[in-house]
Image (cartoon, rainbow, N blue to C red; front, side):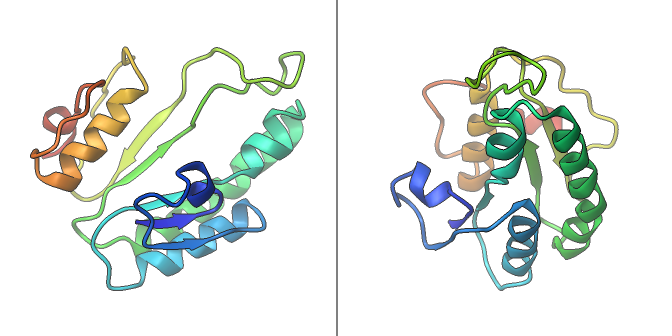
Length: 161
């Protein structure tokens, strides 16, 4: 696994092949694109920490909105760097409403967006019961269905062509 951002720290280095810390969301996107351009098979796991630490926890909705717009401008670069069999999964790791009071995580649903040549166009995966469904889907795809997670339901059948 390529760990970009604070991913290696989050997983205490377990399962990490290469790790690079980043300076910003923009740096994280650039490092992700670099990793996509390498000859590699497996998982590139990127954490764009500014969304969380700079804007979510600090309750800065204007900054959060600007960060989303900046990421949105770079998203086509990621998609161009993807190979035909690649799957991009974008999701938040928890709720963090920037207009809520306090500094802790909040309780709203996370978002999930899947992109890649193999994704069925226009697929609505609905509101899922658990964030664990994303992990179950990743495990299913990375192991060809040989490994199942204890929690979560894979979306592979609904997601791919």
